[in-house]
Image (tube, rainbow, N blue to C red; front, side, top):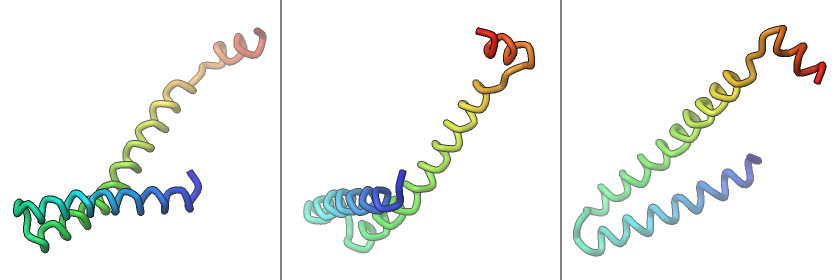
Length: 78
């Protein structure tokens, strides 16, 4: 993904989290300080989780791309 798109997605995520936290504060379920801390925590954890997921996908793709010389020769021949 290109960086401007990632920044836009983070902005949307922050807005959604802030909206949800604001609702919970308004209903009296959370204090403002806790809601702010939770939004900050989730904004740190979201990119970390996305990075781990991307590394997992890359590792799975690499496993599928491992070919023996015989398999490679057969693939080229066909």
